[in-house]
Length: 430
Image (cartoon, one colour):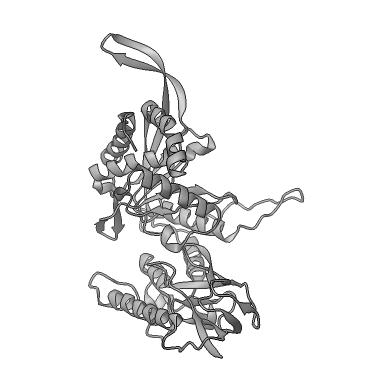
């Protein structure tokens, strides 16, 4: 008999910790290799963690609700195989994860531009990378951070703790008036609840969405520009090619990959849309990673990301769009598939809406809402004169961060996307 430690796996490039949601197996249960043992939540996604080795679950080292660092042990599995701890996959993964954590901490402490807190303050209290990043963004000093009560294991401050503290702090002080004084923010209007009302508690994802939407509006001054595009040629080509895609590639050809292709071309023309803000610095992203909002059966929205979208042709984009949408609805997305986006699209037309004013996915500075495609009477100009014809049209709504994207750039970008759609080559071969 041999025992193998099951460690908190690396679940994405930027994910440094996970919260134990529930154990799917109990001590004494037989566990098959690759069988899911527990469910873990990160700040990006909920996911099930499988066992690398088969055997019997001998000991659980992390309880439900605990926040565990990547690379730390969470359970012990007793296996029939003679696996040496030094040779086990888990041990190697733990060593790699520890090196990763050390390098991240070293990078943050040695960088001249970084002002994030070290893992421990002078009081000796430990803070996770996520909490330290929030403290940095909100300009919370180490002394102030030490005063925040923690509900995590051994009194650690969790993401929920620091966000609750920020909410409380904001409710006590309002922005300064012109005379230099400050005044309390007016209390929200009290709710009235009757016996006929139903009280529904938000699920975890809805709470997360609410926090991020509020944070985005507080971070970025949103401006939206609108363009109506004549997409008749795009519709014609899609209707002509959808059967080919289905028979040849086994893929459903929707309008989404076609529009993503146009967005990518427009980003190449206007690369200052593909940026992020870091204090007084603008980071011009080297990769074009397109996020696409997907509606879940629960009614919530999630935004998987097509990485390196500029390197995919229309067939590759179609396959990726269909794959990510399917995984999203089946709750099988990985943290990496939900991170790294540099620009996002949201298809509000799928709900019958003609336009919308979407909220930015931070730290991105632009997001495009796609309205419903409708047949409309339109003036068509020809050398022989103008006449009225029926055309397929849609509104494109571009919301952008007015701190760094002015109306000229924001308007020209969405106009360029429309140009690519309007000048679609109906004779192209996919």
